[in-house]
Amino acid sequence: SHERALLIPNVETAINFVMDARPRIGARVVVFGQGPVGLLTTALLSEFPLAELVTVDYYETRRKLSESFGADRAVSPETLDGALDETADIAFELSGNPTALDDAIDVTGYAGRIIVGSWYGTKDVALDLGGTYHRSNIRIRSSQVSRIDPDHADRWDKDRRLDVVCSWLSDNDVSELLTHEFEIERAAEAYRLLEERQNEAIQIAFSYE
View 1 (cartoon, rainbow, N blue to C red):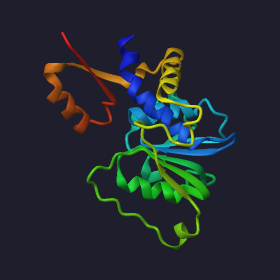
View 2: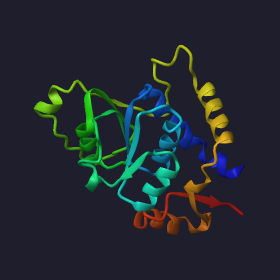
View 3: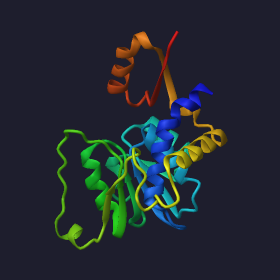
C-alpha cells in the first residue's frame, strides 16, 4: 500500500539501529524518543525476548502509542528517575534532544551500550562525563542508515536489509503512525503542525493530485 511504502525509509533506519545494538535474550532496553523512528524501533524490539522494554517521551499521545507498539512501560523524562528497577543494558537515543543523551548515559549500566541515532545538527551537546561515566565502560556509538556497519558487511548489504524491511512491513500494521495527511500545497501548514503540536502529530503524509 502507499502507506506502507511511505514508511520504508523509517523502518530501514529502525532496523539499522536494532542491528547495531545486537540485543540479547533478557536484555533491559530503554528507548528515548517516540517519534516515527523511535516508535518503529520500539515495535521491532518488542519482538525480542527482552526482560524489559521502557520508552521515554514528553508527549502522552506518543507514550500511549508506544505501549500499543509493545513497550512494557512508557514514561516522561520528568518521571524517569525511579522508573527503572535496574540499569539498562542498551539505551537508544532517538529523540533529537541533546539532553536525552545525558539521560541515556545515566540509565545505562556498567559496560552497557548506547546507540545514538539522533541528528543534533548544530545543537550544542553538554554531557556529564565525570567519574561515574569514566569508570562505566559504557560504549556509545552512532548508527546511521546510509551505510551497513562493517561488522555486518560479511553477510549483509543494503538489498538484504531492504528485503527485511519489506517483509516486516507486510507482516505488521503500523498505520497508527500516520496521524495526518495534507495536500502538498499545504506543506507549510503541515510543518507548523509538526513543530507546534507534537502531542497530536507523529507521521504526516503528503498527497499529490
